[in-house]
Image (tube, rainbow, N blue to C red; front, top):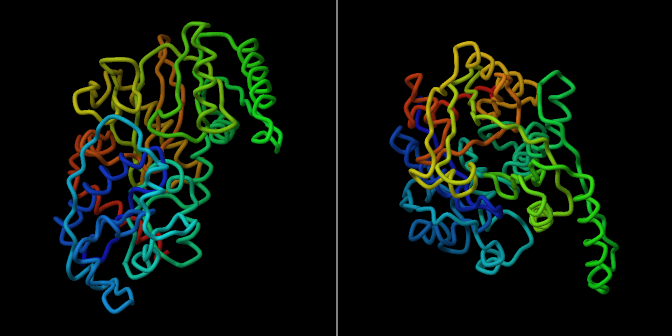
Length: 380
């Protein structure tokens, strides 16, 4: 593969911002080892913190010259994970360039000058199709799924409605939405009373065990497994911290597995066994917090079924190049679809790289394969 100029886009304004830096920095390093001119870029802050002296040279004279970044590659920071979500308000306040845009200063120019953008974003403002839609309008090639597939798959409720209509087995669910009056800030006491009534209504109509989750969260942020009635109200209120809508899903008692799809083939499954709690935000990314068994401890028939479901969901949702589908395997051996990730993590503990390694695809090759497939699709 010829040498390419690649922007690796990470960070952004999402509860998964910190995880995105782990993915982006590792991908950027891999692409450089494959001989490409890869530059790590924060979607929201741009090059303010990442560019260093290279960025300073690129803006000398008042005009931005992206070729300077590709000729004098900035160092790739070594990120670590502290096990907690970022303070997004602090991120907003730290931006020197004051603008309401989700794109940092000179990010669009740098992406336009690259041969392709490797989207290493996770969660809202990256995995939800909005960045992809902008790139489509500007003619900027990028990795991963298109804007429509990404947007639909980001919403768990929409995804479940679509795949269920196509015969995919998925837990039953109900969508809830809190509608507050427009003058809620002027009348906080009345708004709080309405919230109280809403929460009580949800609790009256919900039986446990169940799963309460935000419809568009990622990395298990805003997900609550409720086994006791007294834990239901805190879970509902917890979801309301992320937005006015959430879903209550049937709890499936069984084993959790996940299966990646890469360039039209299902990868080996991974069985996920958290040592504490469930596979939550911290357990996903702290090394040693979860036992990950690849391939999963299932029969060949069930392994084939998990792969079939992953491929089916990938195709139904119109996803491209790679994705990762999470399922539950109940005591009767039935596979239940839970959700699909259109931009799976590529960190040191992420699952798709583990699955790819089992079929002989190393991490660096995996990153380049994702780029190569995106370029082929763009040419078509």
